Amino acid sequence: MPLVQGNSANRIHLDSFPLTADEIEKLPLSIQAGVLLFLGHWNQAHDIAQDLHTPEGSYWHAIIHRQEPDAWNSGYWFRKVGAHPVFLDLIETVHHRSDQTFKGRTSEFLLHGKWDSIRFIEFCEKAARVPGSSEEKLAIEIQHLEWQLLMNYCCEGTL
Image (tube, helix red, strand yellow):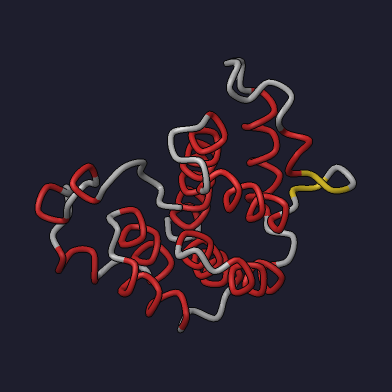
């Protein structure tokens, strides 16, 4: 399931992105992977994440495979991530959203009070089977939040 709903024509393209391809290549690898993923450059993001042997590299790698979709491979990489600090922020952000979309949904992605990436992968798989559904919209919105939180985390480590 992509981070952007609909066809690729709706995605942000590199030529309209505020950074050039050369500028993106100068960014730390964890940030490059996230930017390229957001732009829909799946293969480039995958190549970087696969060679980035950090929890953040594994996290980007897991997200990429979740979007492919390849649930088993995504789950494998999320298990390598372990308990990432982003999970706490993700739970809090999803839980404290005041709009109806998120009301009472947080518990679907928790196991023993902790974010469960495998449950979220399963939710995304089910949601993708019903395009345009409230579940698909929720899955995409949570993935956007997740992307933002992980990107912020990666950027904080470089400042």
